[in-house]
Length: 311
Image (spheres, rainbow, N blue to C red):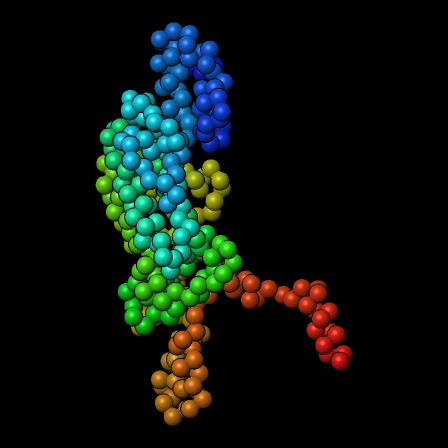
Protein backbone atom coordinates (compact mmCIF):
# COMPACT_ATOMS: atom_id res chain seq x y z
CA UNK A 1 0.00 0.00 0.00
CA UNK A 2 2.85 2.39 0.79
CA UNK A 3 4.21 2.23 -2.77
CA UNK A 4 0.78 3.02 -4.22
CA UNK A 5 0.28 5.90 -1.75
CA UNK A 6 3.61 7.43 -2.67
CA UNK A 7 2.95 7.02 -6.40
CA UNK A 8 -0.35 8.88 -6.09
CA UNK A 9 0.44 11.41 -3.37
CA UNK A 10 4.07 12.42 -3.76
CA UNK A 11 4.63 15.14 -6.34
CA UNK A 12 8.17 14.92 -7.83
CA UNK A 13 8.23 18.71 -8.27
CA UNK A 14 6.79 21.52 -6.18
CA UNK A 15 3.50 20.85 -4.42
CA UNK A 16 0.90 23.26 -5.72
CA UNK A 17 -2.83 23.61 -6.27
CA UNK A 18 -4.72 22.90 -9.47
CA UNK A 19 -8.26 23.79 -10.39
CA UNK A 20 -9.37 20.47 -8.96
CA UNK A 21 -7.56 20.96 -5.66
CA UNK A 22 -4.11 20.12 -4.32
CA UNK A 23 -2.43 18.27 -7.20
CA UNK A 24 -1.59 14.95 -5.48
CA UNK A 25 -5.01 14.89 -3.78
CA UNK A 26 -6.79 15.64 -7.04
CA UNK A 27 -5.35 12.45 -8.55
CA UNK A 28 -6.15 10.26 -5.53
CA UNK A 29 -9.62 11.22 -4.34
CA UNK A 30 -10.91 7.63 -4.62
CA UNK A 31 -8.06 6.35 -2.47
CA UNK A 32 -8.64 9.07 0.15
CA UNK A 33 -12.27 8.02 0.65
CA UNK A 34 -11.69 4.23 0.75
CA UNK A 35 -11.77 3.97 4.56
CA UNK A 36 -10.51 5.77 7.65
CA UNK A 37 -7.26 3.80 7.95
CA UNK A 38 -6.26 4.38 4.34
CA UNK A 39 -7.24 8.05 4.67
CA UNK A 40 -4.95 8.49 7.70
CA UNK A 41 -2.07 6.71 5.98
CA UNK A 42 -2.54 8.71 2.79
CA UNK A 43 -2.66 12.03 4.68
CA UNK A 44 0.54 11.13 6.52
CA UNK A 45 2.27 10.33 3.20
CA UNK A 46 0.96 13.48 1.54
CA UNK A 47 2.21 15.88 4.20
CA UNK A 48 5.44 14.12 5.22
CA UNK A 49 6.86 13.30 1.77
CA UNK A 50 6.10 16.45 -0.26
CA UNK A 51 7.99 19.74 -0.17
CA UNK A 52 5.66 22.56 0.80
CA UNK A 53 6.37 26.10 -0.29
CA UNK A 54 5.38 29.26 1.55
CA UNK A 55 5.65 32.61 -0.20
CA UNK A 56 6.11 35.82 1.76
CA UNK A 57 5.35 38.73 -0.55
CA UNK A 58 4.70 42.41 -0.05
CA UNK A 59 1.66 41.94 -2.32
CA UNK A 60 -0.51 40.46 0.45
CA UNK A 61 -0.78 40.37 4.23
CA UNK A 62 -1.25 37.15 6.20
CA UNK A 63 -3.84 37.59 8.95
CA UNK A 64 -5.53 34.27 9.72
CA UNK A 65 -3.74 31.91 12.16
CA UNK A 66 -2.61 28.61 10.58
CA UNK A 67 -3.17 30.16 7.16
CA UNK A 68 0.32 30.67 5.76
CA UNK A 69 -0.46 28.72 2.57
CA UNK A 70 -2.83 29.75 -0.21
CA UNK A 71 -5.53 27.71 1.54
CA UNK A 72 -6.03 27.05 5.23
CA UNK A 73 -4.70 23.65 6.31
CA UNK A 74 -5.89 21.72 9.35
CA UNK A 75 -3.44 22.26 12.22
CA UNK A 76 -3.13 18.50 12.76
CA UNK A 77 -2.16 18.04 9.12
CA UNK A 78 0.28 20.96 9.25
CA UNK A 79 2.11 19.20 12.07
CA UNK A 80 2.90 16.35 9.65
CA UNK A 81 4.79 18.62 7.21
CA UNK A 82 8.47 17.68 7.19
CA UNK A 83 9.89 19.58 4.21
CA UNK A 84 9.32 23.32 3.97
CA UNK A 85 10.67 26.06 1.72
CA UNK A 86 10.08 29.73 2.57
CA UNK A 87 10.47 32.17 -0.29
CA UNK A 88 10.56 35.90 0.51
CA UNK A 89 10.17 38.26 -2.42
CA UNK A 90 10.66 42.03 -2.30
CA UNK A 91 10.60 44.11 -5.46
CA UNK A 92 9.90 47.58 -4.02
CA UNK A 93 13.02 49.79 -4.33
CA UNK A 94 14.39 51.18 -1.07
CA UNK A 95 13.96 54.72 -2.46
CA UNK A 96 10.26 54.19 -3.33
CA UNK A 97 7.61 56.09 -1.35
CA UNK A 98 5.86 52.78 -0.48
CA UNK A 99 9.02 51.06 0.74
CA UNK A 100 8.24 51.32 4.46
CA UNK A 101 4.79 49.85 3.84
CA UNK A 102 6.32 46.93 1.91
CA UNK A 103 8.88 46.35 4.68
CA UNK A 104 6.12 46.30 7.31
CA UNK A 105 4.13 43.69 5.34
CA UNK A 106 7.15 41.41 4.87
CA UNK A 107 7.98 41.66 8.58
CA UNK A 108 4.39 40.94 9.63
CA UNK A 109 4.17 37.95 7.27
CA UNK A 110 7.51 36.49 8.36
CA UNK A 111 6.57 36.54 12.04
CA UNK A 112 3.13 35.12 11.09
CA UNK A 113 4.78 32.18 9.27
CA UNK A 114 7.12 31.46 12.20
CA UNK A 115 4.20 31.56 14.67
CA UNK A 116 2.25 29.10 12.49
CA UNK A 117 5.22 26.72 12.32
CA UNK A 118 5.73 26.89 16.08
CA UNK A 119 1.99 26.56 16.78
CA UNK A 120 1.72 23.45 14.59
CA UNK A 121 4.75 21.94 16.36
CA UNK A 122 6.26 20.83 13.07
CA UNK A 123 9.18 18.41 13.15
CA UNK A 124 11.04 19.51 10.04
CA UNK A 125 13.48 17.31 8.17
CA UNK A 126 14.41 20.20 5.88
CA UNK A 127 13.89 23.95 5.92
CA UNK A 128 15.16 26.29 3.20
CA UNK A 129 14.79 30.06 3.32
CA UNK A 130 15.46 32.23 0.28
CA UNK A 131 15.25 36.03 0.14
CA UNK A 132 14.90 37.41 -3.38
CA UNK A 133 15.23 41.19 -3.61
CA UNK A 134 15.07 43.65 -6.49
CA UNK A 135 18.79 42.93 -7.05
CA UNK A 136 18.12 39.28 -7.91
CA UNK A 137 21.04 37.75 -6.00
CA UNK A 138 23.66 40.37 -6.88
CA UNK A 139 23.59 41.72 -3.32
CA UNK A 140 24.37 38.21 -2.07
CA UNK A 141 27.50 38.17 -4.24
CA UNK A 142 28.47 41.60 -2.91
CA UNK A 143 27.69 40.76 0.70
CA UNK A 144 31.09 41.74 2.19
CA UNK A 145 31.21 45.04 0.32
CA UNK A 146 27.63 46.01 1.24
CA UNK A 147 28.04 44.86 4.86
CA UNK A 148 30.96 47.27 5.21
CA UNK A 149 28.62 50.15 4.33
CA UNK A 150 26.62 49.35 7.48
CA UNK A 151 29.53 49.86 9.86
CA UNK A 152 32.33 51.81 8.15
CA UNK A 153 31.62 55.50 7.40
CA UNK A 154 34.48 55.58 4.87
CA UNK A 155 33.48 52.43 2.99
CA UNK A 156 33.37 52.92 -0.75
CA UNK A 157 29.94 52.98 -2.41
CA UNK A 158 28.76 49.87 -4.25
CA UNK A 159 27.32 50.01 -7.74
CA UNK A 160 24.77 47.25 -8.37
CA UNK A 161 22.15 46.48 -11.00
CA UNK A 162 18.42 45.98 -10.40
CA UNK A 163 16.40 43.28 -12.12
CA UNK A 164 14.92 45.93 -14.43
CA UNK A 165 18.39 46.84 -15.72
CA UNK A 166 18.84 50.18 -13.92
CA UNK A 167 21.88 50.76 -11.73
CA UNK A 168 22.00 51.89 -8.10
CA UNK A 169 24.95 53.31 -6.20
CA UNK A 170 24.62 52.28 -2.55
CA UNK A 171 26.07 54.45 0.22
CA UNK A 172 25.84 53.73 3.94
CA UNK A 173 22.30 55.08 4.39
CA UNK A 174 21.10 53.17 1.32
CA UNK A 175 22.55 49.88 2.58
CA UNK A 176 20.89 50.31 5.97
CA UNK A 177 17.55 51.08 4.37
CA UNK A 178 17.87 48.18 1.90
CA UNK A 179 18.75 45.67 4.64
CA UNK A 180 15.82 46.48 6.96
CA UNK A 181 13.85 43.48 5.68
CA UNK A 182 16.90 41.26 5.94
CA UNK A 183 17.28 42.00 9.64
CA UNK A 184 13.51 41.49 10.13
CA UNK A 185 13.78 38.05 8.50
CA UNK A 186 16.63 37.17 10.84
CA UNK A 187 14.71 38.34 13.90
CA UNK A 188 11.72 36.20 12.94
CA UNK A 189 13.81 33.06 12.31
CA UNK A 190 15.45 33.49 15.71
CA UNK A 191 11.95 32.88 17.18
CA UNK A 192 11.63 29.49 15.49
CA UNK A 193 11.60 26.78 18.15
CA UNK A 194 10.84 23.53 16.29
CA UNK A 195 13.35 20.77 15.48
CA UNK A 196 15.08 21.15 12.09
CA UNK A 197 17.32 18.41 10.66
CA UNK A 198 18.64 20.25 7.57
CA UNK A 199 18.68 24.03 7.22
CA UNK A 200 19.81 26.37 4.45
CA UNK A 201 19.44 30.13 4.03
CA UNK A 202 20.23 32.10 0.86
CA UNK A 203 19.67 35.47 -0.72
CA UNK A 204 20.35 39.18 -0.55
CA UNK A 205 20.73 39.21 3.24
CA UNK A 206 23.20 40.89 5.57
CA UNK A 207 26.14 38.67 6.49
CA UNK A 208 25.34 39.13 10.18
CA UNK A 209 21.85 37.65 9.67
CA UNK A 210 23.12 34.64 7.71
CA UNK A 211 25.81 33.99 10.35
CA UNK A 212 23.42 34.36 13.29
CA UNK A 213 20.64 32.16 11.91
CA UNK A 214 23.10 29.55 10.62
CA UNK A 215 24.63 29.43 14.12
CA UNK A 216 21.17 28.85 15.62
CA UNK A 217 20.72 25.83 13.35
CA UNK A 218 24.43 24.96 13.25
CA UNK A 219 24.14 21.16 13.09
CA UNK A 220 21.22 21.29 10.65
CA UNK A 221 23.04 23.77 8.40
CA UNK A 222 26.21 21.67 8.29
CA UNK A 223 24.22 18.52 7.52
CA UNK A 224 22.30 20.22 4.68
CA UNK A 225 25.47 21.62 3.15
CA UNK A 226 27.19 18.23 3.23
CA UNK A 227 24.18 16.42 1.71
CA UNK A 228 23.81 19.03 -1.05
CA UNK A 229 27.48 18.70 -1.85
CA UNK A 230 27.19 14.93 -2.24
CA UNK A 231 23.86 14.98 -4.10
CA UNK A 232 24.93 17.59 -6.66
CA UNK A 233 28.64 16.64 -6.70
CA UNK A 234 29.61 20.10 -5.51
CA UNK A 235 33.34 20.39 -4.71
CA UNK A 236 34.44 21.18 -1.21
CA UNK A 237 33.98 24.86 -0.30
CA UNK A 238 36.96 27.06 -1.16
CA UNK A 239 39.20 28.39 1.54
CA UNK A 240 38.17 31.77 2.96
CA UNK A 241 38.98 34.68 0.68
CA UNK A 242 42.61 35.52 1.49
CA UNK A 243 42.15 39.13 0.37
CA UNK A 244 42.62 41.14 3.56
CA UNK A 245 40.11 43.79 4.53
CA UNK A 246 41.02 47.43 4.48
CA UNK A 247 40.59 48.56 8.13
CA UNK A 248 39.44 51.99 6.94
CA UNK A 249 36.68 50.80 4.61
CA UNK A 250 36.00 47.29 5.93
CA UNK A 251 36.09 46.08 2.32
CA UNK A 252 38.60 43.84 0.50
CA UNK A 253 41.78 45.59 -0.63
CA UNK A 254 41.83 46.55 -4.32
CA UNK A 255 43.66 48.75 -6.82
CA UNK A 256 42.02 51.92 -5.54
CA UNK A 257 43.40 51.23 -2.06
CA UNK A 258 46.88 50.94 -3.58
CA UNK A 259 46.50 54.37 -5.19
CA UNK A 260 45.28 55.94 -1.95
CA UNK A 261 48.11 54.30 0.03
CA UNK A 262 50.71 55.48 -2.50
CA UNK A 263 49.41 59.05 -2.28
CA UNK A 264 49.53 58.92 1.52
CA UNK A 265 53.20 57.91 1.39
CA UNK A 266 54.00 60.52 -1.26
CA UNK A 267 52.22 63.68 -0.09
CA UNK A 268 54.13 65.93 -2.52
CA UNK A 269 53.13 64.01 -5.64
CA UNK A 270 50.25 66.15 -6.93
CA UNK A 271 49.30 63.67 -9.62
CA UNK A 272 49.04 60.88 -7.05
CA UNK A 273 46.96 63.11 -4.75
CA UNK A 274 44.51 63.84 -7.57
CA UNK A 275 44.22 60.15 -8.47
CA UNK A 276 43.70 59.27 -4.81
CA UNK A 277 40.83 61.76 -4.48
CA UNK A 278 39.17 60.26 -7.54
CA UNK A 279 39.81 56.67 -6.41
CA UNK A 280 38.26 57.33 -2.99
CA UNK A 281 34.94 58.06 -4.69
CA UNK A 282 35.01 55.25 -7.24
CA UNK A 283 32.29 52.67 -6.77
CA UNK A 284 32.84 48.96 -6.22
CA UNK A 285 30.96 47.28 -9.04
CA UNK A 286 28.93 44.09 -8.78
CA UNK A 287 29.92 41.06 -10.92
CA UNK A 288 27.02 41.63 -13.31
CA UNK A 289 28.11 45.22 -14.00
CA UNK A 290 31.75 44.15 -14.35
CA UNK A 291 30.78 41.52 -16.91
CA UNK A 292 28.91 44.17 -18.84
CA UNK A 293 31.84 46.63 -18.71
CA UNK A 294 34.43 44.01 -19.61
CA UNK A 295 32.42 42.29 -22.33
CA UNK A 296 34.22 42.19 -25.69
CA UNK A 297 32.73 44.43 -28.38
CA UNK A 298 30.02 42.93 -30.53
CA UNK A 299 30.46 42.43 -34.28
CA UNK A 300 28.29 45.49 -34.97
CA UNK A 301 30.39 47.60 -32.60
CA UNK A 302 33.60 46.43 -34.29
CA UNK A 303 32.20 47.32 -37.73
CA UNK A 304 31.08 50.71 -36.44
CA UNK A 305 34.57 51.43 -35.04
CA UNK A 306 36.10 50.34 -38.34
CA UNK A 307 33.91 52.74 -40.31
CA UNK A 308 34.75 55.52 -37.86
CA UNK A 309 38.51 55.00 -38.34
CA UNK A 310 38.08 54.88 -42.13
CA UNK A 311 36.53 58.37 -42.09
